[in-house]
Structure formats: structure tokens, C-alpha cells
Amino acid sequence: EDDGFSNGNLYSCSSCGAEIMSDGNTAATFCVYCHCPVILKGRLSGDYRPSKVIPFSITREKALETFKETIGKKKFTPTDFQSDQTLEKMTGLYVPFWLADCKVKADMDAIGKHIRTWRSGNYRYTETKEYAVSRNADITFNGVPADGASKIDDALMDAIEPFDYNKIEDFSMSYLSGFLADRYDVNKGDVFPRIRQKVDDGSRNILRNSITGYSSVSVSRFNNNIMNTNWNYALLPVWFMTYNYQGKMYEFAVNGQTGKLVGNPPLSVKKLVAFGIGLAVVIAVLFGIGGSLLS
Image (cartoon, rainbow, N blue to C red; front, top):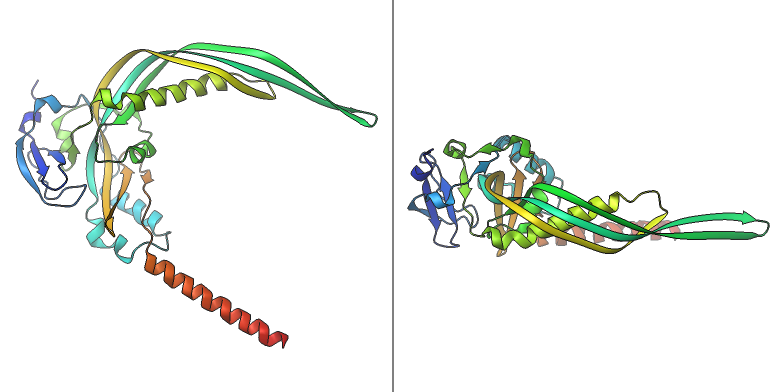
């Protein structure tokens, strides 16, 4: 079924190589990653058609409000960091994600300890009993995410989670109206190690948390086998902004569904130096006053 995907536009950045998608009515004028001008490359290819999408539910105004409120508490950011010129670069971007549904078999061996202490007369006694504990389970993980965009820091996208998959929809080009979308350049085979790590961590936590009633638990063996994996290629909503400070690019992202903000702002050396000098002056004055009082 043709939903207009092939009628969308594909823009290319000659500076960093990013390729940004939009619907036919939304023009891209600058690269969301490096802010260089982009050129229209042509029409979208159906090979990059997503199967799922989570629509934006956080407005740009709300995303900017969250950004200003959080960053406003940082006293040592550069002066122009919250300028209109900087904030106008915040863009509604659908980020490409691979979502994996995984069925796994997990098993764990551990040592559980019961520790009992009591006092008798002048002596204190400790009794330790050790028990061999085993757990095994068939576990299903749905929608384990890993972004497929090489130009966005993986840790940034991991930090922006979670998304509510109850709101996921079948993809339609209409969702791109007014927004841009990156298309994946990291395939599912290359993101699989990240998926595996998340599934391993999740399985380990599930089995470990099922071992209760002991004073302490020490895991001696853990094994996790992914038996089957089904994939969905989805676009997830992110308000994305980059800021270039002294040759280093800083990335900030607001979850377009939940409003969660992630990103570390740069520190202004001038403000830090000014603060240090001011603090030194205050200390010197206080010591001077103290010395006068003692004399």
C-alpha cells in the first residue's frame, strides 16, 4: 500500500554526510547534527520505509521550556548557550530505532547465605549457613531498542529511554508532517551486540531478583541464550539540538513522548575563572576582617 513514503524528500549534508528525511511539505534547510546547509538529494527510497512510529506528544514549546528550566540551573554555561540563535536549532527529529522482540532461556546458580548472630554471656556467636540456589526461566522481551543513527551518541539515546510502546502506531508518512527524520545507517546486525547486552542485563536482574529470603546472595554462574529475535524498524520522537563550543559538539535530546531531557552542557572557562577570582576576593576580605578583629 502506498502511503506517500516514496513522495517524501531526502536531504543530504555535504559536511558530515547526514541524510535527513521529510514529507513533501516540510523543507530541511540545515543539518540537525552540524548546522551546515543541506541540499535536496531526491525522493525517498522504499527500502528505508519504517514499519512503526511513535508520534510526538511533547510540543516544541514544552521541550524548550524543559530545556531552559533545567539548563537555567547551570551557572557556568556559556552566555550564548540559551540565546534565541542557539535554541532555534532545536528540531523535532524522528530517530531511527531497531526494536527487537527476543525470546531467551536464562539460568543462574548462586550461593545464598543465612547469617544469624546472638550473644551468650560474654561471647557473641555468628552462624552462617550456605545454600546452593538455582534459577532458570523462559523470558520474552518486547521492543528492546537500539538506535540506528551513527551520528547520535548511543549513550544519549540509551539515556532518553524509556518510550511507551503502547502508543506505537503503524508508520504513515503523515506523521512526518512538520518534522524531520533520520534514516538508519547502522543495520540491525551491527546493533545486535547492544540488544544482547540489554537482554543479558534484563535476564540477570529478573533471575537475581527472584532469589529472596537470604542475608546475602552471590551469583556464581549466569547463562543467557537468545533463542529467537523478531525485528521492527521504527521512528521514535526526539527534540534534538547540538551546540558547538570551542570546536566540540554537544548533543541534547528531549524525549518527544515523555519530555525527559538528557545531555551535558559545556562549562564556560571565563565564568569559572571569574567565579574563582570573585571567591578569592571574598575569602581575602573575610580574612582581612578577621585579622582586624583579632588585632
